[in-house]
Length: 198
Image (cartoon, rainbow, N blue to C red; front, side, top):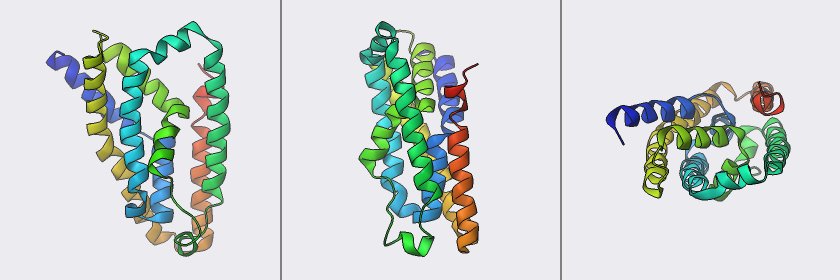
């Protein structure tokens, strides 16, 4: 891969990983509700799960979507339903003191599996593979995956720490409730491009 293309890929990986989206909003809520340490499996599930997704999509799953257009509709429907469910879980999360005993953050496997129903990660993966892996080889897909994994982890760490820091002002149950419902609303709002594509 040429230096210019590699530099552009790093910038794309950072911009798409650091901007608000379902993963970052959920990590922010997880940091606020469960703290940084308990959110680490969630973070690793996103980073490693997305890297694996890039390789698998590049290796042939994208062709399935081209061959069977109905699969786009199925993915869109599943995504909307699951993100709505996650938004409800965030909105109704227990207060911080209770959550340590009652609630639990997303696990590594849940976070990795979530990448497959996250509209933003599909857009990121397909764009990265089509633009930054012109040779369309497994080695090129793996390079894109490694770069995304390397750039993605610090970006999502920031969102988790931001949520954890916000927990200091969310000790009041009313403020926490407002925060959780705001995060849930933003998560639903992130579905706008899926429901009403331009």
